[in-house]
Length: 283
Image 1 (cartoon, helix red, strand yellow):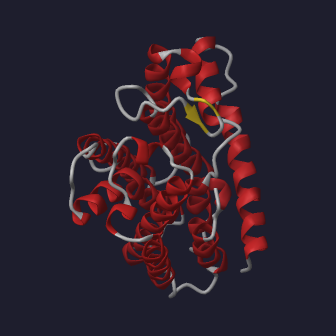
Image 2 (cartoon, one colour):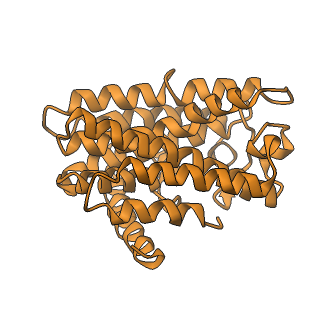
């Protein structure tokens, strides 16, 4: 699948996810200020790549993407919660997110903290809004990815690495937890929704793990070009350990590993093309 077709599918899936998120965040019976902060932090921004992977893995394995939509939304809500918390002064202390003030700058630290917490809860509400034997496994998978098995542990390692010397292996572990683990969950949730066998779930997980690390390397390259927050905070990145050309080569190698992981499946043109699409992105 060529780059234009991949981009068109990403846009179509992202719009479907955005519509479902809009519906989830439109309820008027809850605290208006909290709901405003949640909507601000979730809607109208982001690539929705995690949700898209969930939908497309489900389709590749013969599942119904409509049934996977609540899972895709849960992933995006968990991701959004991590960004709200990540931007706060106690962690990355970022004033901007996606070209606008971060949640704590717009609404204050107290509201941002509660917003992130509420988004996590809404993620599990989305997961359990669907029926089927896969829900329990999906809840466990997302809980691990968002908690000590993933984002939270990765963030702890990230904070500890500020202005400190770490090894390449430690960086890989940090990024595999902070970024890669939720990417892996995206593929696993899509496979679970398709009622996939264990071997298929493992193949899809390997795809997303490789893709997640490639995604992070490209992020580091783009961050370095813009002298972004990681460089300013003295954090180790992939460019700490290799030159830009070597980093691009490593991202390409990981992308090829992602492609190989799903090579047994015939109808996988989008997911193969997504590897190149994310590798070549400029934002």
